[in-house]
Image 1 (cartoon, chains in turn purple, green):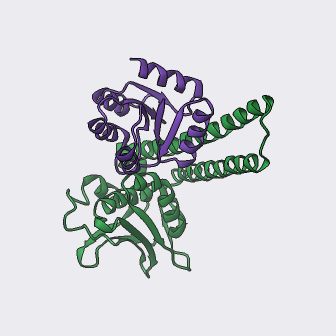
Image 2 (cartoon, chains in turn blue, green):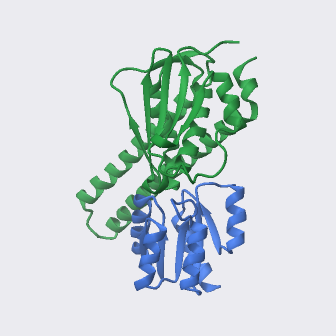
Image 3 (spheres, rainbow over the protein chains, first blue to last red):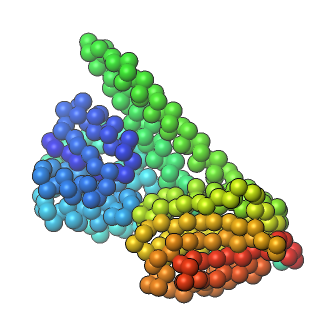
Amino acid sequence: MKVLLVDDEKELVTTLAERLNIRGLEAQWATSAEEAMTRLQTESFDIAVLDVKMPKVDGLLLKKQMQERCPTMKFIFVTGHGSSQDFETGASEVGADYYLVKPLKIDELIAKIKEALQR
Amino acid sequence: MAHMDLIGLSGIQFFGKMSASISHDLKNVLAVINENAGLLEDLCLMAEKGKSLDPVRLKRLAGDVKNQIRRGDRIISSMNTFAHSADSESVTIDLRELLGLLVELSLRYASMRGVRLEIDRPSDSVTVTTSPFVLLNLLWFCLDYAMTAAGPGKTVEIAAEKTADGAWLRFRKLTGMDTAAGSFPAEPERALMRVLNAQIRLVPDSREVAVSLPNKIQEE
């Protein structure tokens, strides 16, 4: 299972990737939309876990860009806001498979990844 | 009439916007600490199964947690100073400190827009007697405009200077002023200017927005 984590909080994605790798997933990370798109040029991923609020290109727009390149890819959104109206509206507009609220629970994240990939 | 009554909804919206930004930053701090703690647990579980613990790795994780705690402490200190800015309608402040607070509060917004903020900090204090909360609100509007007008350089430099009559605050390096959309200052800014007895000047030749403040705000 190849997972791409994208969040501008570098320490968050690097640690999270390490934790997923310990659990047998193949996780890689990027700290910007630009970096994520560059990775997609040379590698393919089954699923991306995207932070909603990122500089320049946010998670919602990044999902559209990634999906154009990899139509079968699944997506999970991560947000710092538990009840943000703009997030919920935006996420439903772009068709998020799931969304999770920070701080993340690793078991919940893995369960959602598996669930999304089995859809 | 009290300043808060004069600025009304605009002041509440400003307070809400800043609080939302601060809470978002704090969420990120907690999220990073959460992952670091989780990784420590993972490493302990692996050690219980016979894998050796690397002290260097553990030390680095502890350092990462400490860094996040320092970051969280800085965010909360700014939040506290910001919250107390509404305590008094007229108090003598050093504008250098206020600009520091403005930048600290605006870092996330600036980062989202890919804009770098710089302060040209004079060595001598730049004091005026004013309403700190209302002034922060006005400067936020100015900074918001400045970020729009930052142009391809994507940098806004903020400076304060003392004059005989009060002080100037300048938002510089606005290379995109010619193409910045919208009218500025609009009514929300004008309401704040009236409270502060302030003036805003757009100076395209020197690529700056300049805000003049009197030495002392006129109290109602």
